[in-house]
Length: 318
Image (cartoon, rainbow, N blue to C red; front, side, top):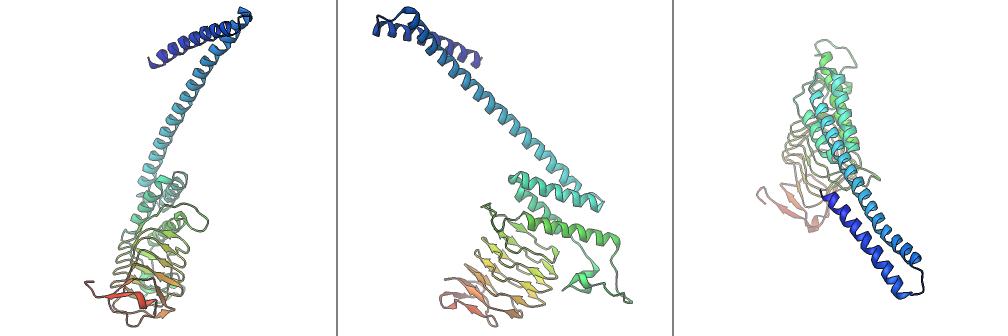
């Protein structure tokens, strides 16, 4: 109905413009022939119709783009739902395929990236015992290089699940922005209570990292990572070496009740806002730089800190 009304208005306007233009030309230029005046008026009226046609085409184009976007969103939602459903499949290759499908969706549709990261983190939070974590928690890959009597060996199912979890960790790392990636979004990770191994997030930009009571097996590499929100390792256990070289904890760092079985490399690391010390200082390599007015919670004995002149040392309730 609206389209017909606008068409009628445009036709009436074209007629009025044609008549008006012809009349004005005949009045301004009396010597001009009537045929020429009518021709010029017709061109002016035709321009009105042409403008209406252009507007109509643009409206159709925008309507088609909106419809296409809705269809794309629907397809993306269906892809996401199918991939999440396949994450519960018994076959490990299906679960790996589902994870890659989710990662591909996150790259193609950025609004899904945080959701996909949440799903991958949720998968890692599932309980997962593996004999290698008990046999060589500091370096699980070396757990079964020698056959020894009385050593519990992993089942094929455990090894396959371990591979799936390593895929999840690798995809999480790949999805986070780093280097020349201009994505300004702060993506958050929640690994509370998870068992992870050889977690590598070098150079990534992260919002909030929640890793309370997380067990880190093997080498944990956070070199040159920038945390814009708090990095929370409260109650976590680092069973292998930890590399925090050049890391930037701009939103604060909590190591409350954290345990370290091996050395912690802090060379070039900086922390802002607050740092919560663990009850027992680990074997340290390098020093931790405190930005001005950083609050230091708990006893910092055994730690080599720089910038302490402007830091505030507070107790448990500070």
